[in-house]
Image (tube, rainbow, N blue to C red; front, side, top):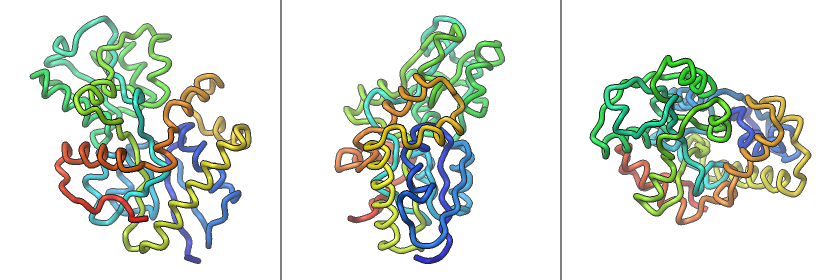
Length: 275
């Protein structure tokens, strides 16, 4: 494991909170660790092209990369009450959006998969407009799109922009399945081998443990990369998206991932590393 390992995750507070200790050397990793921080949909694209050894991906996007990658049990985003939110510039129901243009944070995101499932159940069809996640609220507010699917900090701040919640897609999933919503996961190349995969899983767990034991240690790193600079929003973001599932997805979490991936057309069973 002395080679350079490429690692990619998003600049969002939950990811920088989890990975700070590993990225800055507080958790040792054999060889050089080269870190890339970009938007989740860009990470999904890099994973689809096999550009990174270890990469945070939307769970929905994992359906297309599992021939080359396997998922770790640590480092992901999953839980109850943490899902994406569909918002509009005026109060309306999902059915009212039939034929409308709706902004999404990428076609391969879990958010878009959930939105598509909800639209299918409601019997409506919409036009999708892909946008960077932090531009969606402004587009809805300006009337460029009828509605938008918000992820990350947007779920905490949309009301400040005068927007209205149409549907909590995470709550919709929970009501239909009784399972936590799997938003993101960490994928590692199968070619690196099982020992390296388990070592990376433990390194991520160690990094998260340091963050939990020392809540202020990565504050500067987190704020440096956050799209939303308000301290309270950053704290709420971390509390919401970093859960016990981030330490270990567990049997229930793995079942939820498999359920979601089945909705994306994936039938593989060897989705997670074996511990």
